[in-house]
Amino acid sequence: MNGWSSLTTNMILYCKNWEETVKFYKDGLSLPVNFSNDWFVEFCLAENSNLSIANDQKSTIKSSEEKGITITLQVQDIDAVWEKFAKRKLDPTKIKRHPWNARVFYLLDPEGHRIEIWQLHKQAEK
Image (cartoon, rainbow, N blue to C red; front, side, top):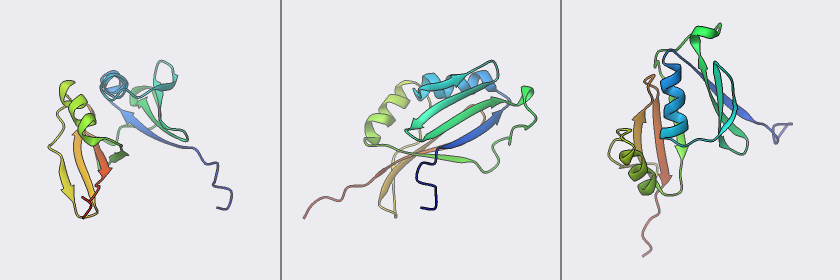
């Protein structure tokens, strides 16, 4: 695919509530840490996909203040993930079905970024 086959992706969220947001992704979502220093933490989402949280007070780029950012994460067992997040008091919405053959729920990180958790809906066999 034109040299993109070994591509690694990373999204960086610049945050005002940096410590609280890092704790949310580390402890709340249980994402593994690839790298960490006093103002930047990189989390592993998948083999070639990362999400980083940067302290906007120590960077040249400032927080987007929740303007139009949704992080979507596909899971294998949405019910188990929902239960885990509810027990951790992360306030997930109810699971609902969408027309694109998915089950989905949402939650917000401490910065107000929307996180969409979804699973491909398996149709009952006829």
